[in-house]
Length: 214
Ligand code: ADP
Ligand code: AMP
Image 1 (cartoon, rainbow, N blue to C red):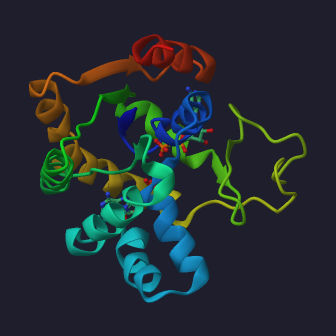
Image 2: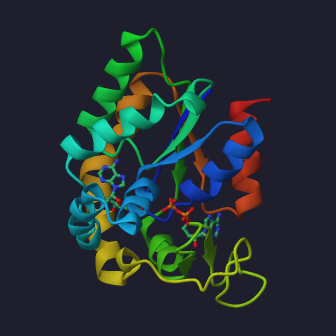
């Protein structure tokens, strides 16, 4: 199964994508995570991406599209994947559609995790992430067992630079201008399904699983 998660930054795409990946035994492919892993490893791609990420802007398509295409052509993606954070604009979506149709493939579902802007700031300002394993927490809604420490690997949690309030506002603008048109694009393709992302995480996942089936 090939799935795309769309939604505002902080809507819960990553949280739900991880659970989808587990349930359906497919890889969770997050372009944001790939950029952050590159940055941590000190690669040229990571350095280039950081400039845009820190400003809340999109990393240019000439970097992002090729990187995503390489990833989905790796062996573990042969049985499907859940994309989180890609596509983020119409040119990226068109590139993906063209690449897949060239090999007789298509995306099965696009899941829109719908959360209004007024909830986003609280979601993002409370998010804490593990710099080592990438696990994500929230100071109110998804607390680690021991405050400030990753349950999975014991590393001290951090707040992402791009989760600062000013940068979140910029990311929301970018979302409305460039990413939201994807809702119309995939709706016209007949594969868009929306879930109410303001519900608690369990309920959001139940709704998504009902869409995707067993
Ligand atoms: P995205 O991948 O869309 O940027 P995340 O999955 O990282 O978003 O979620 C953003 C923050 O909101 C995280 O701190 C996460 O723990 C929290 N969160 C995710 N889903 C919910 C939810 N349904 N209710 C409350 N908080 C949530
Ligand atoms: P995320 O982890 O999905 O919130 O992404 C963090 C940042 O990485 C974004 O604000 C962008 O700067 C960059 N990014 C992630 N995915 C993409 C994409 N598909 N296109 C362009 N930039 C991206």
